Length: 296
Image (cartoon, rainbow, N blue to C red; front, top):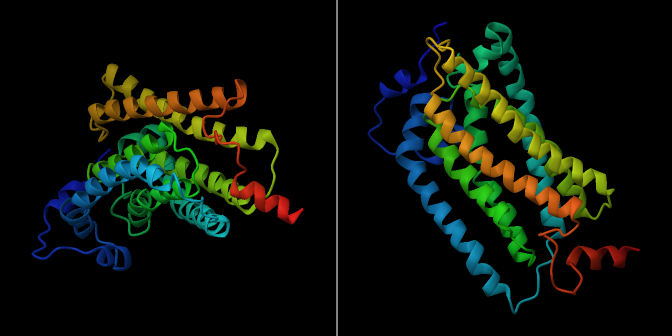
């Protein structure tokens, strides 16, 4: 089952001048231009941003130690709702292309063949924008730091690794990424909507937060399912012209396993052991709790 090779299409391009962020973000979708941008403009920036992000996680708490927590209720509400709406729209746009690939080649086809995932102006742009969105999502941590909330290892590890690997893997044209992206968009639609409600001050039952965490865990489990399908084909010599690279999927599984372990550990400590690692250790009330009491 032959499909267009996006890597071959991108390798024929020549761009004498640097491609800027606005060129790709607002210009007409062009895979060649986008690959040039990712490899020559964005990758150095993303590496520097990742290093700066990790430094921020350890430096800002010391800076904020003798300062009052910022009241960012409205900004945080707007931020979370914006990410939820973005995720919902992206899911809506990408879903038809994933289903089309599924109808064309079945589950194996969606895992093995790119089809026009990267070259189509809609699915290609949505996929690229999803990768780029992992940069702005680092703001989640900024809100925690400025509100003097605990930033646990699971949080900053997940954000930094997802952001950096996304920038590296986009130019590898991974066909099975379509499922990971689609599922993540669905999860983030629900997750950020929930966070938006909580930031606004809406009280929810305990099972709601448990369900949100479970959806995050489920997406990691689904990643192992997709990897297992490809691994089985590899063992039984059924890959043939499959475009999925087993070694890259193996590396991805290692990362997914760390996510799964950390999120399951968080779930156990928070909902089973009832000792949430994200609960502020200080006795003073949080900004949200004070605001809620004012409104009552």
